[in-house]
Length: 398
Image 1 (cartoon, rainbow, N blue to C red):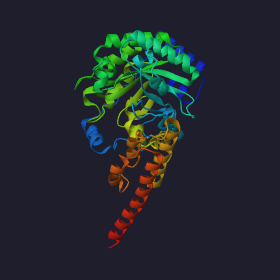
Image 2: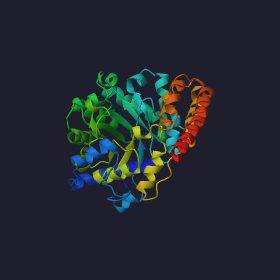
Image 3: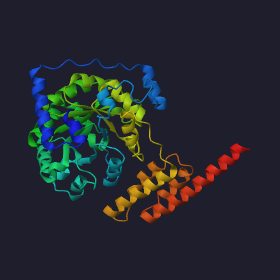
């Protein structure tokens, strides 16, 4: 069992460190074990995924998975998302089967100025035994110093330090942070070396297929990060230039998996159990990371967990359950930040996607500020949804 699974499934921190040392000794003594040849996806598969989100090459949830992975030993992770991964969302994701959560992106520079708002990003949800902290920046010494401070503050509540080298947002990239570090691999490696030397917890790196359009440098970049001390890498199968358009290239994840010894986390286009199983089967990745597929849909974690376990898929949430979850998310948040819940608007809109009448409610949601405001709109939405569905049934019966 690799160290990432031990973190995900509740092993003690000392065992994690011991497993890392054992893995490092093993890889150095055997000169690099032989690796499986990755599956080569064809253009038809990518077209199917891009157009419909279905994975026709995965006939059943556990097809293509070996017994170890089919029994559910593949961790399912909530991707770090700025402005999304608040404490309430992480709490709900864990309740519904997520194994490891990440904080929002944490600025090493802001931490160095003792910014209280940034420090609060490190706060944990009540059910968050451990959380991975994603740090961003481009100054090796600053990042190492702040990573050490995070570790000293959080202790065993820290799962590991993750370094963001994949964010494509312009305001991040223009400062040389995020995916811009893929254009300066020597600097990126220096950051990993200094951060991993400064902390006892594992240091991981999240990056993309490449930076520029059409670029495919993830394999070489992954090897550099591993050599610099990264204990695991997370790979998103798009370039920074793509942002989130087009189809995630899972083949690049498979090639990274075949090229490095450390655990590889697969990321991109996972919106349910079938996709998660297909990603693991196609790439051999050690963990599945879900980002946009979880927005307004924390149920995706129980669906993915059931699929990886070879179990029947849980029922999809009803409109009533989705509205109830939106209310609960807002309620948890209100207890933390007070009754000014402007931040909740985007979350509520995600929860309500596809519910009859949700488009009409969107304008009202944009005016909501307090928990009572949201509840009033949500209650009316359920009334409108029931009326619309009844009208549709009467029409179909004619």
